Every structure is written in C-alpha cells, then in structure tokens.
Length: 86
Image (cartoon, rainbow, N blue to C red; front, top):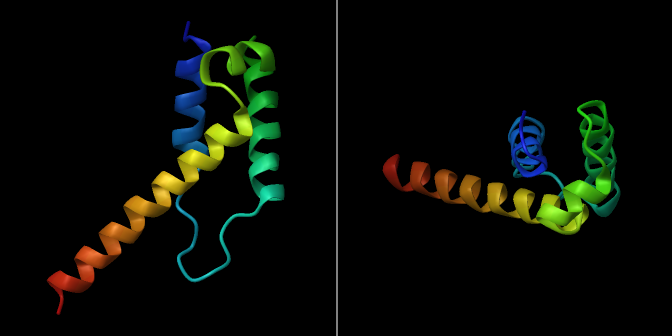
C-alpha cells in the first residue's frame, strides 16, 4: 500500500496539469476544489486529510506550488519550441 505522500504525488501527477497559457491562471477557488477532490480521493483509499498534511504540509499550498512548477516547465518548453522554430 502506498504512503500518504506517494498517494498525493500519484493523484497530483494525474489530476493537475499546466494551466492553459492564454487563459487566466488557475484561481484560488479552482485550487481549493482540487484540494477538496484530493481529500475525497484519499479518504476512499483510507487516508485522512491530517495524514496527508502531516507528510506534505498545507494541501492548498502544495497544489498551488505544483501548478506553478508545471506552468514554469510549460513556459520553458514553449519558449524552447519558439527558439527551435525561429
């Protein structure tokens, strides 16, 4: 069985994606909705919100950081594509 952290990382990898580059960034309500969905999914696997937060800290902050990192990676990929195709 996975640890709470392994579950969170798996769930986020499959549920959180880079924002669309030409639309508004994911807002607080969307991130909170992801955090709520994560807790629901975790509970179905036998993990509590307290167990998740004990391993990764605040769920909202963790998800926001994951989105920011994915956006940065996507921005870098798009910039590289533009340079390569120029």
